[in-house]
Image (cartoon, rainbow, N blue to C red; front, top):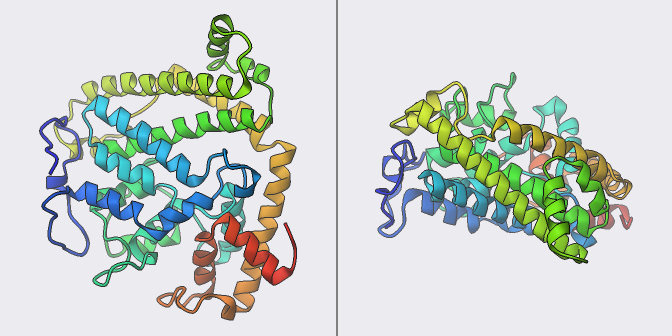
Length: 381
Protein backbone atom coordinates (compact mmCIF):
# COMPACT_ATOMS: atom_id res chain seq x y z
CA UNK A 1 0.00 0.00 0.00
CA UNK A 2 1.26 3.48 -0.86
CA UNK A 3 2.81 5.46 1.98
CA UNK A 4 1.69 8.95 3.07
CA UNK A 5 5.14 9.90 4.32
CA UNK A 6 5.89 12.05 1.28
CA UNK A 7 2.75 14.17 1.72
CA UNK A 8 2.68 17.71 3.09
CA UNK A 9 1.27 18.12 6.63
CA UNK A 10 -1.91 19.72 5.28
CA UNK A 11 -2.60 16.97 2.70
CA UNK A 12 -5.50 14.54 3.03
CA UNK A 13 -4.30 11.21 4.39
CA UNK A 14 -6.27 8.04 3.69
CA UNK A 15 -5.39 6.53 7.05
CA UNK A 16 -7.05 9.55 8.70
CA UNK A 17 -10.14 9.48 6.49
CA UNK A 18 -13.47 10.05 8.18
CA UNK A 19 -14.48 6.76 6.62
CA UNK A 20 -17.48 5.45 4.74
CA UNK A 21 -21.15 5.76 5.62
CA UNK A 22 -21.38 1.95 5.56
CA UNK A 23 -18.27 0.51 7.30
CA UNK A 24 -16.17 -1.93 5.27
CA UNK A 25 -12.93 -3.81 5.92
CA UNK A 26 -9.88 -1.95 4.65
CA UNK A 27 -7.96 -3.25 1.63
CA UNK A 28 -4.52 -4.76 2.20
CA UNK A 29 -3.18 -3.39 -1.08
CA UNK A 30 -5.00 -0.11 -1.76
CA UNK A 31 -5.62 3.03 0.27
CA UNK A 32 -9.15 4.23 0.88
CA UNK A 33 -8.80 6.95 -1.79
CA UNK A 34 -7.38 4.49 -4.33
CA UNK A 35 -10.43 2.30 -3.77
CA UNK A 36 -12.68 5.31 -4.32
CA UNK A 37 -10.96 6.03 -7.62
CA UNK A 38 -11.28 2.42 -8.72
CA UNK A 39 -14.97 2.26 -7.84
CA UNK A 40 -15.63 5.40 -9.86
CA UNK A 41 -13.76 4.04 -12.89
CA UNK A 42 -15.74 0.79 -12.77
CA UNK A 43 -19.12 2.52 -12.40
CA UNK A 44 -21.72 2.52 -15.16
CA UNK A 45 -22.02 6.30 -14.90
CA UNK A 46 -18.32 6.69 -15.69
CA UNK A 47 -18.55 4.47 -18.76
CA UNK A 48 -21.46 6.51 -20.08
CA UNK A 49 -19.28 9.63 -20.13
CA UNK A 50 -17.75 8.23 -23.32
CA UNK A 51 -20.86 9.30 -25.23
CA UNK A 52 -21.71 12.49 -23.38
CA UNK A 53 -20.79 15.70 -25.10
CA UNK A 54 -18.64 18.61 -24.01
CA UNK A 55 -19.46 21.10 -26.76
CA UNK A 56 -19.96 18.87 -29.80
CA UNK A 57 -22.49 16.05 -29.89
CA UNK A 58 -20.83 12.64 -30.10
CA UNK A 59 -21.55 11.98 -33.78
CA UNK A 60 -19.98 15.22 -35.03
CA UNK A 61 -16.47 13.73 -35.00
CA UNK A 62 -14.32 11.12 -33.30
CA UNK A 63 -11.56 13.55 -32.34
CA UNK A 64 -13.56 16.00 -30.21
CA UNK A 65 -13.60 15.75 -26.43
CA UNK A 66 -16.28 13.88 -24.58
CA UNK A 67 -17.01 13.99 -20.87
CA UNK A 68 -14.85 10.88 -20.51
CA UNK A 69 -11.75 12.22 -22.25
CA UNK A 70 -12.21 15.54 -20.46
CA UNK A 71 -12.33 13.77 -17.08
CA UNK A 72 -9.12 11.90 -17.87
CA UNK A 73 -7.40 15.15 -18.81
CA UNK A 74 -8.60 16.79 -15.59
CA UNK A 75 -7.24 13.83 -13.61
CA UNK A 76 -3.82 14.10 -15.26
CA UNK A 77 -3.56 17.83 -14.57
CA UNK A 78 -4.79 17.40 -10.99
CA UNK A 79 -2.20 14.71 -10.26
CA UNK A 80 0.58 16.92 -11.63
CA UNK A 81 -0.41 19.85 -9.42
CA UNK A 82 -0.82 17.66 -6.35
CA UNK A 83 2.57 16.07 -6.88
CA UNK A 84 4.23 19.48 -6.94
CA UNK A 85 2.40 20.64 -3.80
CA UNK A 86 2.72 17.46 -1.75
CA UNK A 87 -1.00 16.74 -1.83
CA UNK A 88 -2.77 13.41 -2.19
CA UNK A 89 -2.81 12.53 -5.88
CA UNK A 90 -5.21 9.60 -5.46
CA UNK A 91 -7.93 11.69 -3.84
CA UNK A 92 -7.57 14.43 -6.44
CA UNK A 93 -7.75 11.83 -9.21
CA UNK A 94 -10.91 10.29 -7.73
CA UNK A 95 -12.53 13.72 -7.56
CA UNK A 96 -11.47 14.60 -11.10
CA UNK A 97 -12.95 11.38 -12.44
CA UNK A 98 -16.20 11.85 -10.49
CA UNK A 99 -16.82 15.54 -11.09
CA UNK A 100 -18.90 15.13 -14.29
CA UNK A 101 -20.88 12.02 -13.36
CA UNK A 102 -24.05 14.07 -12.83
CA UNK A 103 -24.04 15.78 -16.22
CA UNK A 104 -26.93 15.31 -18.59
CA UNK A 105 -26.54 14.48 -22.28
CA UNK A 106 -25.79 17.44 -24.55
CA UNK A 107 -23.68 19.35 -22.05
CA UNK A 108 -24.93 22.48 -20.36
CA UNK A 109 -27.81 22.80 -22.83
CA UNK A 110 -29.29 19.56 -21.51
CA UNK A 111 -28.79 20.64 -17.91
CA UNK A 112 -30.43 24.02 -18.45
CA UNK A 113 -33.52 22.43 -19.96
CA UNK A 114 -33.79 19.77 -17.28
CA UNK A 115 -33.33 22.34 -14.53
CA UNK A 116 -36.16 24.43 -15.95
CA UNK A 117 -38.47 21.44 -16.32
CA UNK A 118 -37.66 20.30 -12.79
CA UNK A 119 -38.07 23.77 -11.23
CA UNK A 120 -41.44 22.87 -9.62
CA UNK A 121 -39.88 19.65 -8.29
CA UNK A 122 -36.64 20.81 -6.67
CA UNK A 123 -34.68 21.74 -9.80
CA UNK A 124 -31.66 19.99 -11.27
CA UNK A 125 -27.97 20.64 -10.58
CA UNK A 126 -25.20 18.48 -12.04
CA UNK A 127 -23.01 18.63 -8.91
CA UNK A 128 -25.92 17.53 -6.75
CA UNK A 129 -26.76 14.84 -9.31
CA UNK A 130 -23.17 13.55 -9.17
CA UNK A 131 -23.64 13.09 -5.43
CA UNK A 132 -26.93 11.31 -6.09
CA UNK A 133 -25.24 9.02 -8.62
CA UNK A 134 -22.40 7.92 -6.32
CA UNK A 135 -24.54 7.59 -3.18
CA UNK A 136 -27.79 6.17 -4.57
CA UNK A 137 -28.22 5.54 -8.28
CA UNK A 138 -25.30 3.19 -8.89
CA UNK A 139 -26.56 -0.35 -8.18
CA UNK A 140 -23.43 -2.46 -7.94
CA UNK A 141 -23.12 -3.64 -4.37
CA UNK A 142 -25.33 -5.92 -2.32
CA UNK A 143 -24.60 -4.29 1.05
CA UNK A 144 -25.25 -0.62 0.31
CA UNK A 145 -26.64 1.82 -2.28
CA UNK A 146 -24.25 3.79 -4.46
CA UNK A 147 -20.48 3.34 -4.30
CA UNK A 148 -19.99 3.93 -0.55
CA UNK A 149 -17.09 6.32 -1.10
CA UNK A 150 -15.14 8.01 1.67
CA UNK A 151 -16.35 11.20 3.33
CA UNK A 152 -13.52 13.14 1.70
CA UNK A 153 -14.52 12.09 -1.81
CA UNK A 154 -18.17 12.88 -1.17
CA UNK A 155 -17.26 16.26 0.31
CA UNK A 156 -14.99 17.10 -2.60
CA UNK A 157 -17.57 16.07 -5.17
CA UNK A 158 -20.11 18.49 -3.72
CA UNK A 159 -17.77 21.32 -2.67
CA UNK A 160 -14.92 21.36 -5.19
CA UNK A 161 -16.12 24.76 -6.43
CA UNK A 162 -16.28 26.14 -2.89
CA UNK A 163 -18.76 26.19 0.00
CA UNK A 164 -22.32 25.33 -1.01
CA UNK A 165 -24.35 28.30 0.18
CA UNK A 166 -27.40 27.98 -2.08
CA UNK A 167 -30.74 28.76 -0.45
CA UNK A 168 -32.53 26.51 -1.00
CA UNK A 169 -29.97 23.79 -1.50
CA UNK A 170 -30.26 21.56 -4.54
CA UNK A 171 -32.77 18.91 -3.54
CA UNK A 172 -30.42 15.97 -4.06
CA UNK A 173 -27.82 17.61 -1.83
CA UNK A 174 -30.33 18.54 0.86
CA UNK A 175 -31.71 15.02 0.97
CA UNK A 176 -28.29 13.45 1.35
CA UNK A 177 -26.84 15.74 4.01
CA UNK A 178 -29.93 15.24 6.14
CA UNK A 179 -28.38 11.89 7.06
CA UNK A 180 -24.67 12.48 6.42
CA UNK A 181 -23.15 15.88 7.13
CA UNK A 182 -20.64 17.04 4.49
CA UNK A 183 -20.05 20.43 6.15
CA UNK A 184 -21.27 22.46 3.18
CA UNK A 185 -20.46 25.84 4.73
CA UNK A 186 -16.67 25.34 4.60
CA UNK A 187 -14.18 25.02 1.79
CA UNK A 188 -13.26 21.52 0.71
CA UNK A 189 -9.85 20.01 1.29
CA UNK A 190 -6.95 21.11 -0.94
CA UNK A 191 -7.21 18.12 -3.29
CA UNK A 192 -10.79 19.07 -4.21
CA UNK A 193 -9.65 22.63 -4.80
CA UNK A 194 -6.95 21.28 -7.13
CA UNK A 195 -9.53 19.23 -9.04
CA UNK A 196 -11.64 22.37 -9.57
CA UNK A 197 -8.73 24.34 -11.02
CA UNK A 198 -7.64 21.37 -13.13
CA UNK A 199 -11.17 21.28 -14.54
CA UNK A 200 -10.89 24.93 -15.59
CA UNK A 201 -7.46 24.40 -17.15
CA UNK A 202 -8.55 21.34 -19.11
CA UNK A 203 -11.85 22.87 -20.20
CA UNK A 204 -10.36 26.11 -21.51
CA UNK A 205 -7.57 24.43 -23.40
CA UNK A 206 -9.40 21.55 -24.96
CA UNK A 207 -12.03 24.00 -26.17
CA UNK A 208 -9.29 25.94 -27.95
CA UNK A 209 -8.08 22.67 -29.47
CA UNK A 210 -11.56 21.48 -30.48
CA UNK A 211 -12.55 24.93 -31.75
CA UNK A 212 -9.50 25.11 -34.02
CA UNK A 213 -10.03 21.55 -35.25
CA UNK A 214 -13.67 22.32 -36.05
CA UNK A 215 -12.67 25.59 -37.74
CA UNK A 216 -15.09 27.58 -35.61
CA UNK A 217 -12.53 30.38 -35.55
CA UNK A 218 -9.25 30.96 -37.38
CA UNK A 219 -5.98 30.79 -35.41
CA UNK A 220 -5.37 34.48 -36.05
CA UNK A 221 -8.43 35.43 -34.01
CA UNK A 222 -6.79 33.96 -30.91
CA UNK A 223 -4.11 36.61 -31.16
CA UNK A 224 -6.56 39.06 -29.59
CA UNK A 225 -6.54 36.99 -26.38
CA UNK A 226 -3.75 38.25 -24.06
CA UNK A 227 -2.91 34.80 -22.71
CA UNK A 228 -2.62 33.26 -26.17
CA UNK A 229 -1.01 36.08 -28.15
CA UNK A 230 2.60 35.56 -26.92
CA UNK A 231 2.32 31.82 -27.48
CA UNK A 232 1.21 32.34 -31.08
CA UNK A 233 4.00 34.89 -31.59
CA UNK A 234 6.59 32.41 -30.29
CA UNK A 235 5.27 29.61 -32.50
CA UNK A 236 5.16 31.89 -35.54
CA UNK A 237 8.79 32.88 -35.01
CA UNK A 238 9.98 29.34 -34.37
CA UNK A 239 8.04 27.32 -36.93
CA UNK A 240 6.90 28.01 -40.47
CA UNK A 241 3.73 26.60 -42.03
CA UNK A 242 2.47 24.60 -39.06
CA UNK A 243 -0.56 22.51 -39.89
CA UNK A 244 -3.72 23.50 -38.02
CA UNK A 245 -3.62 20.36 -35.86
CA UNK A 246 0.03 20.95 -34.94
CA UNK A 247 -0.62 24.61 -34.20
CA UNK A 248 -3.54 23.70 -31.94
CA UNK A 249 -1.50 21.14 -30.01
CA UNK A 250 1.62 23.30 -29.67
CA UNK A 251 -0.52 26.21 -28.47
CA UNK A 252 -2.51 24.18 -25.98
CA UNK A 253 0.47 22.36 -24.46
CA UNK A 254 2.15 25.71 -23.75
CA UNK A 255 -1.00 27.22 -22.29
CA UNK A 256 -1.60 24.22 -20.01
CA UNK A 257 2.00 24.42 -18.83
CA UNK A 258 1.72 28.13 -18.11
CA UNK A 259 -1.56 27.74 -16.22
CA UNK A 260 -0.34 24.75 -14.19
CA UNK A 261 2.86 26.59 -13.27
CA UNK A 262 0.82 29.62 -12.22
CA UNK A 263 -1.48 27.54 -9.97
CA UNK A 264 1.49 25.84 -8.34
CA UNK A 265 3.30 29.13 -7.69
CA UNK A 266 0.27 30.98 -6.34
CA UNK A 267 -0.86 28.02 -4.25
CA UNK A 268 2.57 27.57 -2.67
CA UNK A 269 2.44 31.17 -1.50
CA UNK A 270 -1.06 30.78 -0.12
CA UNK A 271 -0.22 27.55 1.65
CA UNK A 272 2.90 29.11 3.14
CA UNK A 273 0.92 32.11 4.35
CA UNK A 274 -1.79 29.87 5.82
CA UNK A 275 0.75 27.92 7.86
CA UNK A 276 -1.68 25.02 8.08
CA UNK A 277 -0.48 21.85 9.74
CA UNK A 278 -3.62 19.78 9.13
CA UNK A 279 -6.21 19.49 6.37
CA UNK A 280 -8.91 20.64 8.81
CA UNK A 281 -7.16 24.00 9.03
CA UNK A 282 -7.38 24.35 5.24
CA UNK A 283 -11.14 23.74 5.41
CA UNK A 284 -11.53 26.33 8.16
CA UNK A 285 -9.99 29.15 6.10
CA UNK A 286 -12.22 31.87 4.64
CA UNK A 287 -10.58 31.57 1.22
CA UNK A 288 -9.24 28.82 -1.04
CA UNK A 289 -5.56 27.94 -0.91
CA UNK A 290 -5.45 26.59 -4.48
CA UNK A 291 -5.86 29.41 -6.96
CA UNK A 292 -4.63 31.25 -10.01
CA UNK A 293 -2.63 34.42 -9.49
CA UNK A 294 -4.58 37.69 -10.03
CA UNK A 295 -2.93 38.20 -13.43
CA UNK A 296 -3.77 34.67 -14.59
CA UNK A 297 -7.32 35.05 -13.29
CA UNK A 298 -7.76 38.13 -15.49
CA UNK A 299 -6.14 36.39 -18.46
CA UNK A 300 -8.35 33.35 -18.07
CA UNK A 301 -11.44 35.56 -17.89
CA UNK A 302 -10.51 37.13 -21.24
CA UNK A 303 -9.99 33.68 -22.74
CA UNK A 304 -13.40 32.51 -21.52
CA UNK A 305 -15.02 35.62 -23.01
CA UNK A 306 -13.42 34.83 -26.36
CA UNK A 307 -14.58 31.19 -26.28
CA UNK A 308 -18.09 32.25 -25.27
CA UNK A 309 -18.59 34.46 -28.31
CA UNK A 310 -16.50 32.59 -30.88
CA UNK A 311 -17.29 29.00 -29.92
CA UNK A 312 -20.18 28.44 -27.51
CA UNK A 313 -22.40 30.89 -29.44
CA UNK A 314 -21.20 29.86 -32.87
CA UNK A 315 -24.13 29.19 -35.27
CA UNK A 316 -23.09 25.53 -35.70
CA UNK A 317 -23.06 25.00 -31.94
CA UNK A 318 -26.30 26.95 -31.48
CA UNK A 319 -28.05 24.80 -34.05
CA UNK A 320 -27.18 21.60 -32.25
CA UNK A 321 -27.94 23.19 -28.89
CA UNK A 322 -31.50 23.96 -29.96
CA UNK A 323 -31.99 20.41 -31.21
CA UNK A 324 -30.62 19.07 -27.93
CA UNK A 325 -33.03 21.22 -25.95
CA UNK A 326 -35.94 19.83 -27.94
CA UNK A 327 -34.82 16.23 -27.40
CA UNK A 328 -34.60 16.63 -23.62
CA UNK A 329 -37.87 18.55 -23.41
CA UNK A 330 -39.76 16.06 -25.56
CA UNK A 331 -38.47 13.06 -23.65
CA UNK A 332 -39.26 14.65 -20.29
CA UNK A 333 -42.82 15.33 -21.39
CA UNK A 334 -43.25 11.81 -22.70
CA UNK A 335 -41.90 10.02 -19.62
CA UNK A 336 -43.77 12.14 -17.08
CA UNK A 337 -47.05 11.70 -18.97
CA UNK A 338 -46.46 8.01 -19.67
CA UNK A 339 -44.06 6.64 -17.03
CA UNK A 340 -44.67 3.13 -18.31
CA UNK A 341 -42.01 3.98 -20.91
CA UNK A 342 -39.40 4.12 -18.14
CA UNK A 343 -37.37 0.95 -17.56
CA UNK A 344 -38.99 -1.16 -14.84
CA UNK A 345 -35.88 -1.17 -12.69
CA UNK A 346 -35.32 2.56 -13.03
CA UNK A 347 -35.92 4.43 -9.79
CA UNK A 348 -37.64 1.63 -7.89
CA UNK A 349 -36.60 3.49 -4.73
CA UNK A 350 -38.01 6.82 -5.97
CA UNK A 351 -41.78 7.42 -5.67
CA UNK A 352 -41.65 10.85 -7.36
CA UNK A 353 -42.21 10.33 -11.08
CA UNK A 354 -40.51 13.60 -12.01
CA UNK A 355 -37.36 12.67 -10.11
CA UNK A 356 -37.37 9.23 -11.72
CA UNK A 357 -37.59 10.85 -15.12
CA UNK A 358 -34.84 13.35 -14.32
CA UNK A 359 -32.57 10.54 -13.10
CA UNK A 360 -33.24 8.54 -16.27
CA UNK A 361 -32.64 11.43 -18.67
CA UNK A 362 -29.57 12.68 -16.80
CA UNK A 363 -28.04 9.22 -17.09
CA UNK A 364 -28.54 9.06 -20.85
CA UNK A 365 -25.73 9.39 -23.33
CA UNK A 366 -26.18 11.72 -26.29
CA UNK A 367 -26.51 8.68 -28.53
CA UNK A 368 -29.17 6.98 -26.42
CA UNK A 369 -31.18 10.19 -26.03
CA UNK A 370 -31.21 10.72 -29.80
CA UNK A 371 -32.20 7.09 -30.38
CA UNK A 372 -35.00 7.30 -27.79
CA UNK A 373 -36.29 10.49 -29.37
CA UNK A 374 -36.29 8.94 -32.84
CA UNK A 375 -38.01 5.80 -31.53
CA UNK A 376 -40.82 7.68 -29.80
CA UNK A 377 -41.20 10.71 -32.05
CA UNK A 378 -40.06 9.35 -35.39
CA UNK A 379 -37.68 12.24 -36.04
CA UNK A 380 -34.04 12.19 -37.03
CA UNK A 381 -32.47 15.08 -35.11
